[in-house]
Image (cartoon, rainbow, N blue to C red):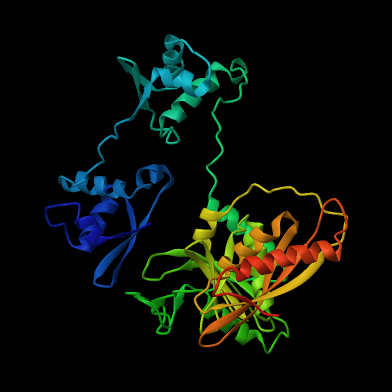
Length: 422
């Protein structure tokens, strides 16, 4: 066993004899010091531990005690204070609450005492002193488990816990976003996810992740068109969509955007129609602008835009307008008749205004009207519609459809600013 001279000195206030002298004293008294070596400015005693003294030197303090006895010195050995038992408070009612069975208070106390615990009761609480050999007992549930173990698990009746389970409130944004995903995937689009951070925007970040990502995006379209462009060299036909948050000055908004590298206006408009009709929104219309982008509206509310290669819709507004109730109409077994009509109107005329007149004049036999062409000059515009007529009871004749068309012509031209193009 090797012991440092300076370590021994730290346990005595008085100066110890020189290392060689101390080695001789220890050898004469009770030890067998084989050698003293000088090492790193200190002296190291090589002490041979005899079999009859091994127990005394397990913790090295046996040498200190021998030095103190031989030199009649007081050693500075600070023994730790005895550790007090950890006290765990347990309410008596908690035994029945957790175990589901009532154990008499007296029996609980007796069980814990038999397990070596100290138990004191104050009012309705037991204060349990944990034995030092049971460090696994930390919380009240541990104490209750010990009582149950001795009491006997076989005496505890099996019983399912009673709990009132309620369904969480539906998140409409997620619900209708999932519906939109299904619609667009069915149309051949693939979903992508992109960063909300962009190079240019209206809201600048204090701690951007990169120099080219200093702002929060104000739309999904710009990033989606860039993604389409970057993938054109790998794929011929690209149709992508994204659902995510945008951050214009007006406030955070959930948005939907879709883009394609080979679509035309009517294909993208068809995607808009599919999404809106899939959400039960039917009273929407399109308004064209000078930049070739058609605004999509419901009443006076703007809900999005559509162009020849992209669309973007305000999903928060769609959630407010969505209707889950589907109206059932049996499919007619009789053929449909398609007619076209083109209307000249002032440049500020809304599509919905013309559609309302056509629908009111046509009556119930008009199953659908589809705007398929818009032409504008400086003074007025031309709106062309496909009109689909169908009866659930019979095959419509040309004469019957012609009569309906005449009513539509008359209703349109009743407005002095409108003219049916013939």
